[in-house]
Structure formats: structure tokens, C-alpha cells
Amino acid sequence: MKMVAIIGGGISGMTAGVLLQKAGFKTEIYEKNALPGGQCTGWKREGYFIDNCIHWLTGTRAGSALNELWKEIGALGEEVELYEKEMFFSSKLNGQVLTFWRDKERTRREMLALSPEDEKEINKLMKYVSMAETMTVPVEKPFDAMNPIDFIKLGKSMKAMGKVMKEYGNMDINELAMRFKHPLIRRAIIDYMPRGYQAYAFLVSYGTVTGGNGDIPKGGSLAMSLRIAEKYKEYGGVIHTNASVKTIILNGKKAEGILLENGKKAEADYIVCACDMDYTFRKLLPEKYMPKGLKKMYVNREKYLVSSGFQIAYAVNGVFSELTGTRVFSCSEMIVGMQKVQSMSVQSYDYEPDFAPEGKMILQTNFSQSEDDYKYWESLYMDKETYNIRKQEIAKQAMERIIDEYPFLAGKIHVIDVWSPMTYTRYCNSYKGAYMSFVTTKQAKSITVPGIVKGIDNVMLASQWLMGPGGLPTAAAMGKFAAWRIINRKDR
Ligand SMILES: Cc1cc2nc3c(=O)[nH]c(=O)nc-3n(C[C@H](O)[C@H](O)[C@H](O)COP(=O)(O)OP(=O)(O)OC[C@H]3O[C@@H](n4cnc5c(N)ncnc54)[C@H](O)[C@@H]3O)c2cc1C
Image 1 (cartoon, rainbow, N blue to C red):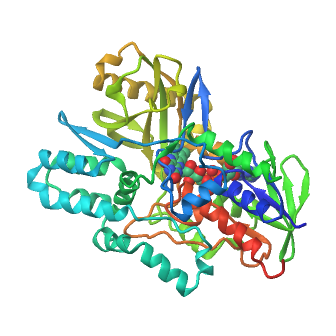
Image 2: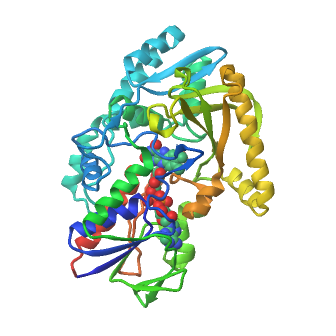
Image 3: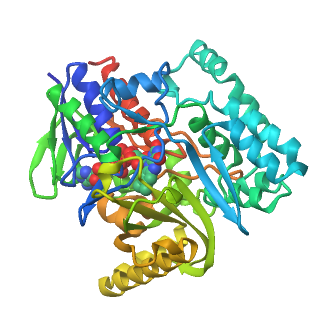
């Protein structure tokens, strides 16, 4: 039986693992952390559960290949209840509030009441959001293995999406916002995504929610990761936790196995690199093997942007319906990383009462951070004490601003955890602290990279970094493609 060593027990690695086990391979996953899941995770603080990934899971609507994949690997299933988000998010400016509801018609009416002079653009936006609901992540087989018929089928299934791209594919989020006259509509659109994102990403994200294809599995991110790990083990897979891989052992054009940080070696017929791609080609394999497409993006730092977050979790004594959903509001200026910010968000997890003790709730804030911010945190991290002090200062300032916005929280809220882009590098070896892949911008459409390593025959790649802008469906798709390549090898 052929042996596959999988480096990284995130969604990509575990997806590859489940599918390879099913196909009759013997596989073992080596994960540096104590738990599988990678970035799809959560943790406890002071009796509260901090869920740190799924805002929406694309592929919850039955009938798509992606939905089938989620079920096949155990992420979703009959027994997994889904929480249907009622609102995408709301934005507030000068006392006025605009909410992007799951119900598009409700959003349309709210926008029209707010700004009748934007009627044409509002109706157009909503029409195109309906079209964007058809967007899916193709997961059947690697794109380079698709034949003309596969492409025709894919084109047909996403015909409406083609129209969205024609209308909004060549503008960024700021340009989309500027199509509207009303300042709150402009602000709401800009509020949601990091600067530079392409406009269509907003339509696709919102369309995922309105189309019922972006619900949240009950139990949250860590529970989903653990379900996949369980499925993997059911098929006979083995997960080694606290098992950081130091390098891949090469012999000419073949990889022979892996060497762990603890000095142990493991032989393998195939290796799947399912950890960060920059890390892979700096630490695990010689850099010369990095695929050209990836290299282009990593080298071109001005064009291929990445983003991360500075995040804070707060415990709230009480349950307040005014805080339901994700709410963005203006605040007095403060500095986070290298950026001056004048607006912030709070997200409530009240849809999961078990995430907080009875009669209490948990809130989170996420300030988007750029690569420059990452450099700031990276250099501060060298002096841990200063780093921790700065994190706490920002958390305190953010909490004061939340109380300014929601005065009823005075004396009822406190900070329970703070984490920065550096946390992602420390926890997952993530490039520049990013938890998604390269941002697809107008100037730089991200390059889809085949998961093979030219020059080393038996090493496959599986990671969200192979296709921008990343995310859970991409991670799962890339894991599936790595498994597909091994299963369909001619020399098997
Ligand atoms: C705050 C936040 C919100 C998000 N929201 C969403 C969302 O709403 N929807 C969505 O689709 N996506 C979301 N994402 C993104 C999603 O979490 C990622 O796209 C996905 O989890 C990436 O999976 P991966 O397997 O490619 O990488 P990773 O999760 O990074 O997995 C790689 C694994 O490799 C391990 N590893 C690294 N180096 C080594 C080594 N040397 N040896 C052994 N193991 C190693 C790491 O510990 C990790 O477990 C969010 C992420 C975050 C952090």
C-alpha cells in the first residue's frame, strides 16, 4: 500500500487525507499544533468560546459539487444543523443605519428609502447580486486536468456570473462605492472589505448569503475541523499533533520522506505539502522549486496584496439584541498597527448561546491589517512585553469606543483576548500573518497555481494559497486536487 505523508492538518491537508484514505492509500498527517484545523479554529477564555473563522461557509446549499465535498469529508451532513444568517452586516453613519439583509428585497427597500436618487444603481446592484448567487467553486478536478467539455459545462453553470464579471469585474470596491450618491451607501460598501478588493468580491460574498449558500454550521469553526478529523480517523487516517515538520528529505528528483523538528524521520511514497506555501519553499523545500506563478506573486509585493486582522474578544454581562449580527460604526480616531482608523465593527455570536455562559454574550472586533501593519507587529513582537502592552492599549481604546456607541455596555464589558497578525504566523506559519490568500485586485488578478512541484515527482501542494482569494472552499478544493493527482497517477 502506498504511503502518503501530509504536512499540515488544516482544511486542505485533512481534505486530501480523507479522500486518499477512501481511495485506499495509507496516509499520516503531521500537524505542528496540538489540534487539527489550522486557521479554522476557536479557543476558550474565561468560560467563553472564541470562534475564529467561519463568518459564512460557501457551499451550504445542497446540489453543488462543493456541498457534496463538504459532506464527503464530514464538514456538513444530516446531523449538522445550519444557522441561517439573517443579516450580512450593517453600517452606521451620522445616525443612519443600512443593513444588508439575507432578504435582498428588504435591503433594496431600505436602500431606496435612504437614497431615492440612487434608485438605478441600487436596482442594478441587487439584480447582479442575484446573478452572483450562482457563483460556485469548481471542485471536481484540477483545472489543468479539465477538458474542453468540462470547461463548457463550467461556463454554462456560471453563465450569470459571467455577466457580473462583465459589469463589475474591472472595478475595485472604492469605485463601486462611488457609483452611489448617498454617503452611507458608499461607506457601507467600503466598510466591508479591505481596500483594493475587487468590487465583484462584494457581490459574490453578499450573494452567497442571500442565496442561502453561506450559512454557518452549528458549533462553529473548531467543531467543523474536528468533524473532518474524525471522518479522517474513521477511514483509518493517523494524525500526529505537536509534530512540526522541519524539512522534506530529497534524493535527486524524488522525495523520500520527511524530517520532523524532534529529529524523527518518516518515509513516504508521496508527500502533500498542505501548509503555508511561502513557508514550504523557504523551509521545507529549496526555493528553486517554487512554482513560477507563486513566485511572481510573492516577489511582486506592491501588486499582490495580503491582509490580516488585529482582533479583540470581549465578554459582555447580559444579552442585548441591539448587538445581533455584525455592526460597523464610526468612532473617534485611533491607531491600529500603522493605520489611523475612524470606524470599527462588533460582531455578536448570540446565534450560538453555548459560546457564552448563561445570561452573557461574546463580541469580537476585527481591524483589517495590511502588510505594512504586519511589519509593525513583527518588529514589536521582538520585545514581547512592549508587544503585549500595545495590544492591550488598543483593546482598551477599542472597548471605550464600543461603549461610546453602545452606552448601555458601560460596566458590563471587558476584554478577554487580543491577537494580532503575528498570532497567525506563530500558530500556522502564515505568510505576513495572512489568513486568506492574495487579494484579487484590479491591477493584479491572482494566479491559479497547479499543485505540482516541477522537478520533484512525488510532492503535491494543497493550500488556499494556490488560488486567490483563498478561504475554506479553496482550501478544500486544493486538498481534493492533491488527492486527485495522486489517485490518478499513471505509475500507481
Ligand atoms: C479570522 C478569520 C476569519 C475567516 N473567515 C472565513 C470565512 O468566513 N469563510 C471562509 O471560507 N474562510 C475564512 N477564513 C479563512 C480560512 O480559515 C482559511 O482559508 C483556511 O482555513 C485555510 O486552510 P489551509 O488548510 O489552506 O491552511 P491552514 O489553515 O493554514 O493549515 C495549514 C496547517 O499546516 C500547519 N503547519 C504549518 N507549518 C507546519 C509544519 N512545519 N509542520 C506541520 N504542520 C505545519 C499549520 O499549523 C496548519 O494547521 C477565515 C480565517 C480567519 C483566521
